[in-house]
Length: 212
Image (tube, rainbow, N blue to C red; front, side, top):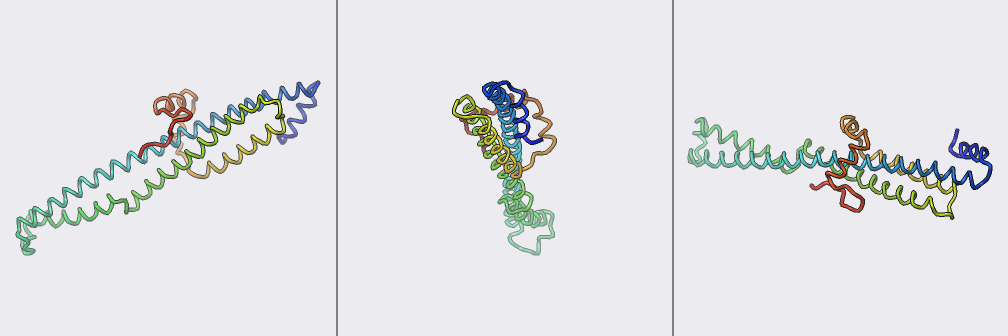
């Protein structure tokens, strides 16, 4: 049964138009409240995922640069030790210097984000940030519509249009990035969502994007 059919059936069960409007107002208020929570939950989950990839990327970048610096130092000292004589690269120190050069090149490649793995992580973080922004926008729109429910100029049909608009936007936002089951299970309860928002200062009006 469609939403319009349900509304028509409930309207028939009401004695007056005023009763139907009051009943519809209560029902849509509940729907908008549930939608707002679902969107806020998505904001929290995407914030968690984006932060995770940002932290991991920063650690790998720092580690790669540290190891690359060490490898370059190893090569420089080794080259000085053998006085740039390639015939001495078969010595243990010289051999380490040669390996250090190869390792330095590889780690510098990864450290600059040119490697496939690092690029993938960065892309995932960006996708979650884009999804986060869309879900945050939906949160604000849902709250705005819910406030307007008390405006006497609007009736049930307008409430229905607002809600359908939110559902379509929700479907589009869902396609931007997926959240793993492990993260979804972390935020199944309203208490978990509220606690995360409080700990990370994700209140309305604050910047919700994780720091890179």
